View 1 (tube, rainbow, N blue to C red):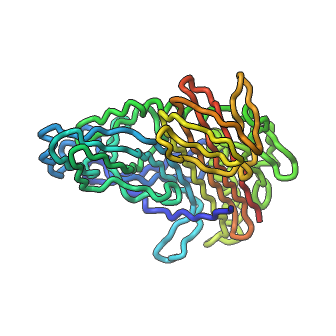
View 2: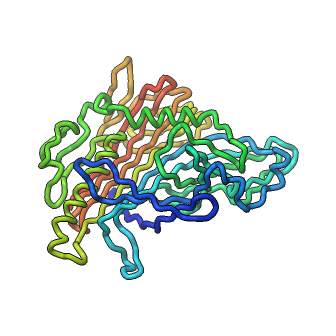
View 3: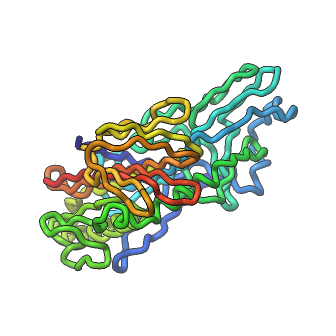
Length: 398
């Protein structure tokens, strides 16, 4: 199934402390010397030094230090980038030379009240520390990155013995890492499985999946499969766009397309500005990347031509047709990967981490475009071995 998505870009505003603004315009690394601007749109940022000076009142129940038991169900990182934006003059949007990018960190939590009295919990007081900055939670996120999130209420009431669940979203300025610390007002929320989740995310993003699937990183349309180091300049800068798609997803693939599309967008701008000085007909370029990590799972892989994964409570967390995934299902057996394209064996995996990766990339003009749609599922054991992997290599060209 082909999904075509357009990301609407917000105005870049960053608050420093409680009041003020700052614009960040870093230049990304490039395949060549790049001149395109990349702006980051963030939520309000407080520095650690001035957090205590912000004017919102401290909730009364924090004086009692009664907080619910907080557990991490899963953790998601998201990244989006586009050159499409709406303006006052062009309500339908324009395709700009410059790019706007956003990073997100999403915690999927359970909150349990172990006390005899009712607890109040407000997402308004949740903050995320990264480096020397603190980010406020936001409800303004890309639903194209995160589908149907059940956000924690701004003012939730938790009865004695009750457990509620929900998600909290932060828009940040860099990819997630181990240094992230979740705060409730000024109280750290210790999540023992968070570090394990980041380790699994790192393993999933840095692994060489050619070992698993037996195929190189990229497919060059009719010219077969090739690794990144074997790509030629004519493969990268081809009119009207490079026709190449990833066979599987790791972090280097994401960075590669960020650089590739930036460079081709700049080349298109330089070529056309002499022809259409005011409004050069530039392509749309979008990238959407999401990785969700579910730690500490005891799961059962059911025998079928469906990839059905259930946790220890019998809850179905994944149900996909193997026939929809081009690579087949790879399972580690005696230090070697076996590929299953139809009936799969029943297997149990204890205390593992499930990782789901999604990468969407669009470059082009309406009916003259290249689209990449990859979905990948990985299971990682306690020793950071990938014991199962499968990837869908969806792509489209017009």
